Length: 272
Image 1: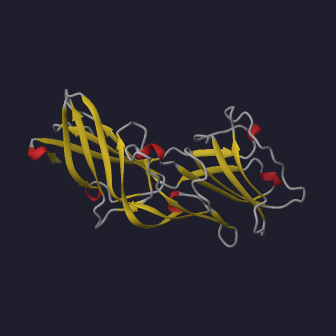
Image 2: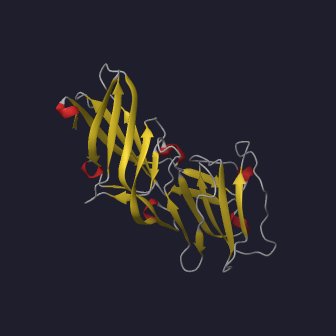
Image 3: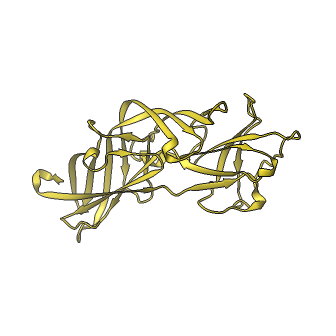
């Protein structure tokens, strides 16, 4: 991967892994087990065959899930309840899902990847959106388990081995990325039951590289596209600008619930 008229080169290693799971229960005093618990989530519940929600609220826990509010109780009449929940770690009111309880249990929402006001650190304003669906619950089912699956792809860049050089800063620009689409999450909620219909336009997203601050991007494929990234690395007082690198040369696609890590190495010192 050559830049500066062939005077410099960097090497990119790519890897993919599952994003850590999120899990919550609808009853706080039963405790939590497995996965990471979201700080807050929206929960919508329908009585069986009802077209309007029995409840639609945001649940928060300021004390690590020793308790949470608001506290609600099961309907007086014994009925099945179908639960839909979603969570995101930034902002609020970013999506407005619609729900289906007829035939298949689904949640559908439209989404546009946000950009920062300065267009310099877009990754910092891009949330991690996750969904859970638990249909057919009754009073004896409590607490209801909500196992969340991440609807987006996390894309993180890291600085690996740059020899003895001191990297002052590094800047990434994602180029020609599909920016909006419609997502349908179907029960049972698994990465393979998260489906996106992705639409134009294509946009660019930028970031000063920070570990554990990934871009959160709509899943998409790269065959036959110009989607890629540009890297600018400041070493000492010299800025090293590298040309566009196509994602198709490293990764066939970004899938839901996956984290893609691209590690930047210099001078042939490649650690896999």
